[in-house]
Image (cartoon, rainbow, N blue to C red):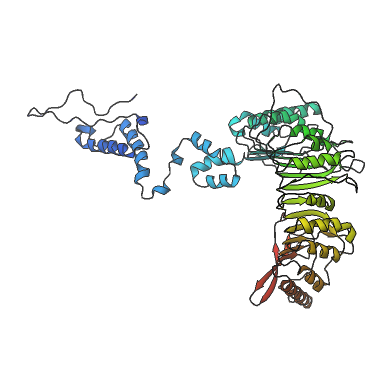
Length: 575
């Protein structure tokens, strides 16, 4: 309830009968002052301070409690507008904690959260305990203490963006909020092992219902009676989910009858889905299939990236999984990237279904196709203008040849080819080389899975003379090692004038550039000669293989004024 300070019931009169000016009156209701109106706040503050000199007795130059509170509030309104550096003064730290917490809620990146937390002590006290440790959680399904913590603290559970359920036998580092690693004996103790798994499932599902802003979910719990089928009905209620990654042998088992939900549920925000099996025998099915995978994908109508990879768990298990059901019924209008590994097309229409599937997905840009079932008489038969946006293709040479030969009105923007295994004979590779030369002359990058001799690479270079990146992969004949015919290789690579990266063949001997021993000096001289020769024959060549196998090191050719210098650099494995 507002009140007026200094108001008088009757005006004072001077000795000559003229009324005195009434004392200054100010409204003490703080909510009546607009923070965007510093002029009114300044006038009220100036009037309040000026009225102190007019007071008599012990009240002169003294503020009451209400006046002191009002003056501080008015200062907080005026100060940001009269600061010497207005851009450096912000009102964000003056906001209530609830508003600041709501602002931080919209920051997903942990790096951005850390930068925001280090801006000031106020933000640190909000970001670190409530958001930084909750953006990415990685733990096992048996971590009941974590699930219980999220169940009890609903406001913290909604801050989780990425959740990874690890395998019970995994040795990877767990990511859980600090202070939860201590196990709760009352929660985790049980007399029956089956009851323990039921309890874990119950707590996990209850915690998932609290994660209202979950964006990425990864399931790698392979050694457990629980499967993704126990959790999937709860995930269907998470409308913010964007990525689903499942690594479980049970996902390739026979399909179970799904419980009726009473209404149609979909995950409209899911753009990426990955389904992979493991090498472990636990949960492996003697007759694996894609029925359950297809059942889960029915809830993802807006899928853009799909990865289905099957790994043979034991020699007696089938090497591939039938993919006919996926090709027949799977349709996603916005599918951009597709990876299928160790799948097969059944005889009697399987390849026709695969051809119809590829023809129906014109938005595909990245296609990794590892399927079997093709013979000399049954091949992929794509219609006109199939895969018009294809930029990257990974498959065997027969599938690549079939795709390249399919007619299109406009050339495909194909730049990357992977997974090609050259046979070592001109007749065996003729169809692929002809298709590459006629329909994809502008390919910039080729990564082979294997080759036999230099004639394979020579025919490849003649078919794709505009290569920038060439990886020959594994040499299938002869002992691997450092080549001695560097001159012949340099002449071969000179047919690719734009080549900048060449992997698969080692030219450089192991040597230390700073050593003073006779052996190292000899190897260094030899390496310098190789570097000069390759730089002369290949004007743009820069990156080559290091002498160590499996290392994250490469040889870099640096061209300088006085010649060419070779150097060892460490690069990321993904590159």
